[in-house]
Image 1 (spheres, rainbow, N blue to C red):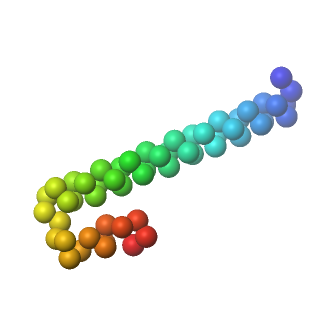
Image 2: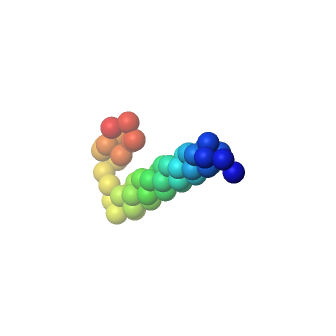
Length: 53
C-alpha cells in the first residue's frame, strides 16, 4: 500500500467515523424529545423541540 493509498483509506475511515457520530447525535436528540414528551412537555411549546429551533 502506498502512502497515497494509506492517506485515502484514513480519510475514508474519518468520514465513516463522522457519519457514525452524526447518527448517534441524531439518536440522542430523538431520545431527548421523547423523554420531554413523556415527562409532560406542554403542547404549546412543541415547536421548541424541533431541530431547526
